[in-house]
Length: 111
Image (cartoon, rainbow, N blue to C red):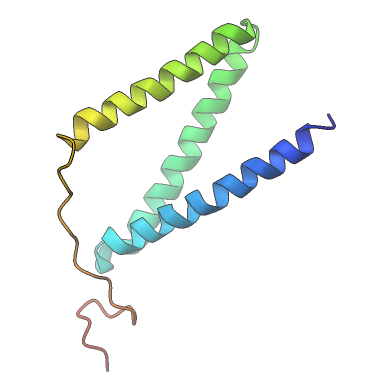
């Protein structure tokens, strides 16, 4: 219990930059007319994934800790492999997206 609070705080510190990067990526790449829908869908998918993860932990709670750690490692390796397959060959840069206007004006012309 004494180590749980610092570890929980550390997890929160790690989640902050991730959330910031996620929101920035959504804002930068979502079309202006669909930005609200993109943010809403992203929030819903995140909540759904968290709920499925909690359900999986509940079902697997009786398993040995070593098996659970191996399952977590397998998920990470599977995600890395999926990224490698979907991202294409190493060294290929993704196409640049147009910059997002600072004013929020989709045309970037301003007043």
